[in-house]
Image (cartoon, rainbow, N blue to C red; front, side, top):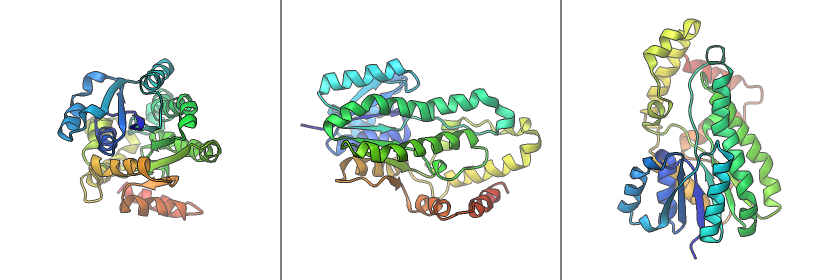
Length: 281
């Protein structure tokens, strides 16, 4: 009997690739998204991979508790078990707190943090029954705070802290927990964050020079050899599903490992501050 994994945010990018990859690995992938009208790319990729019969699309809005509860209940009712979840749904945001205010912070936290917590909470009883897994796609931005990403990094830091705290508790009941930390993924920066660079710079006031430096750095990074394809970044997610034991923290590339290592050995924070200041030009 095939194991069942529920994956969020599968209309594009890492989530789409993870759903197809999990199906290739023999899992039944319940691929969820807020708008199922955007499922065409996923379904086409599943057909091309020959796994359309193992990919099932369901609606799930991680910011809506009723939607989360309904989706998980349906999956368990239809398949009899839930063996893993992949918290992948998220939203990027570029800006600094003085200029974008608290409403935007709350919006970013709602998707990137509270949505992860809610799905994990609802899924845990079923994962406990199956000896299952919680895999959460965070970011190198969940380890290293990055300029003009205060809200996004705060949410990802929160997710990492939540999962790091949950992991030993969940393990005591037979549930494994891991976080997966991608670096730059090709084509996703401008598309997902929806940057209007000229408008942002026009409104940036005293932050304009630093913002220009950051945007130039980010666009270069997302087009460089360090950037991965969605399929490359999703491969460690699939590996985590199938490994006998998952490590808690998984980076998706050598570059991401090197980047995170700077923070994990930087006791006074000076190395990170020096590197991030360099991003501003």
